[in-house]
Amino acid sequence: MKASIWVNAYIRLLGAVPIPAMVVRRGDSDAGAIFIKINRLDGSAQVLRPAFSAPESNGGRAWTYALAGEIPEEPAADAYLARQADFDSDMWVIEIEDGRGRHGLDEFLISE
Image (cartoon, rainbow, N blue to C red; front, side, top):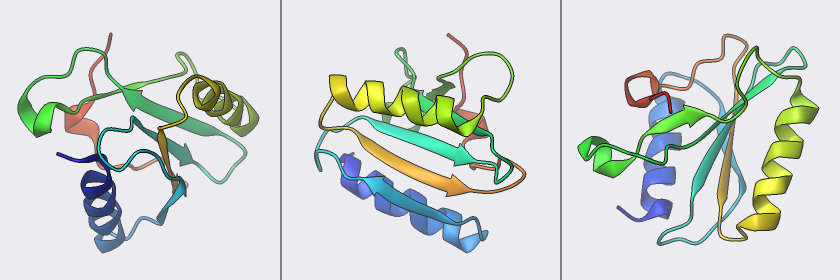
């Protein structure tokens, strides 16, 4: 599935819950990697990145936490995303704002 279609569908699904989400960086519409920043509105943020080994379910998309350990402070999450953008100019970034850290992708999280 094209990245732009997946991103648009994901944002609509979150909006129905409602969980506020927006695209903060547009990537390649066909095949850009998608990163999800979960802003917990308390100075901390998590980042979901594409998993290296994604199962065929969910169109081959699976996620893993980019920054291991405890929930990092938001500047650490932003720095991680900036480093990724230096490496991959075609990446997407979706930012979710939810104090409970909800993202709706729990069933697609894997540990690597």
